[in-house]
Length: 205
View 1 (tube, rainbow, N blue to C red):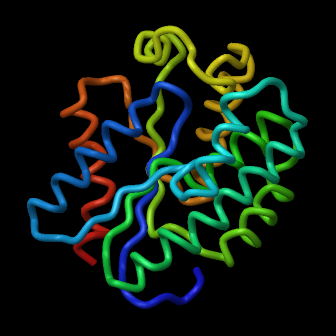
View 2: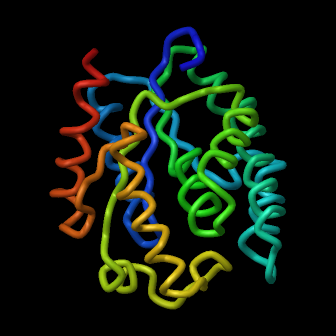
């Protein structure tokens, strides 16, 4: 992990419809109620440049896999430089909806570009910044479908085989990468309690 001053970096991950956005909000509320300074953020699109990249990534037609990976890396570089590192330097807790694990799972495995290659690209884009903890919310396809409704963006419209591959990638890579996996199929409060069980030891450290 690259040395930094203060702060805590928490990342919530998972496939489409896993409930990341909801759990980011619940976790942030819990930490703020405890008196902590919290910044919530997301990828792609959390910066002015990132919002333009997000429209290209999710709003358009087909994109070459390498182009997709490079656009994600560009968004992430801006995100780290403009949002994440400044907040960490202020000693705040940053909770991000997606980070490097998304690229490893989606582009590295889902697009078959290679885990090591995408990992190296992401490390360069972030300057080697690693989260303090990554929590993966794991849900099956049927549960995800009920939460998504009609797919609204290019990634959500990918095939069921693609999404199954991404889910498997998260599960397979979790042990070797130190990610925590939580069953995200329960009600939101039960999932929030499971997420807190993962995060609390890091927050209290």
